[in-house]
Image (tube, rainbow over all chains, first blue to last red; front, side, top):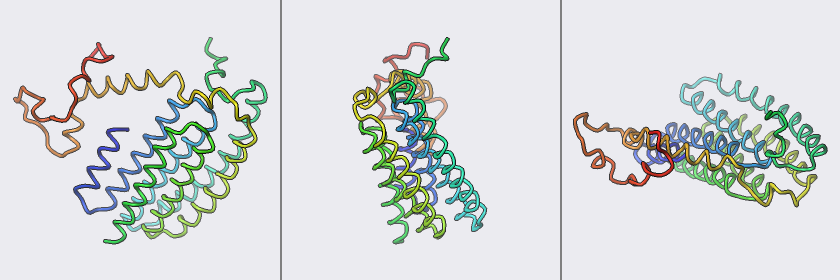
Length: 115
Length: 143
C-alpha cells in the first residue's frame, strides 16, 4: 500500500497527465481493499473492502477507455455494476445466515474447515 | 486544467475514504467512508466524460448497494467482539511480510522515481537517503 501511495503521489507530483494519477489512485484503492480483506476481522467490513476493490477495477477500466477514446471499458463497467449488485444481494443473506448459526460476525470464529 | 485539479481533489478524497475504511472501528463509519469513496469515484467518472457511468455509480452503488449494506449493519448486533477488536490475527503476518518484501526488494522507491542506481555503486544507501536502516533487522531473518 505504501508503494502504491508513493507511486500515486509521484505520478501526481511530476506529471500533468490525469490518467496516470487516476491509474495510481486505482492501484492504491485496490491495495487498500486487499489490505482490508487481509487484516480486518468483521465480515461486513470485509465485504465492503471487496466492493472497494471492485470500484478500483472499474476506475481503471473507465480511465483506460477514456484514454483510448472508446466505449468498451464503459460497457464492461456496466457489466461489473450488475455483477456487483447481484454479488451483494447474495452475500448479505449468506452473512445473515452465518450470524444466525454462530452468533458472531468475527471471521476467526468461522474456522471449522481448518482440520 | 481545471478538470485535472478537480480530478486530483476527487482522487484525494477517494484515497482518504479508502484509508479511513482500514482505520475506523465501527462498520457504520466504514460504510460512510465507502460512500465517500464511491461518490468521489462518481465525480471522477463525470470528469472523464462518461456521464452514464457516473449516474449509475451514484444510483446503483451509493443508493442500492450501500443502503442494503447499512441495513445489514443496523440489523446485526452492535456489541460484537469484532467491533471491539478491529484487526484480525493476520495483521502481524501481513505487517511482517510487508517488511520482509520491502527489505528483500529495496529498489522500488528508486524505481518509482524513475532512475536506477549504478551497478557498481556499493554504498546503496547513498541513492536511498530516506529509507530507514532498521527495516533490514526487524522481523525478517531469511532475507
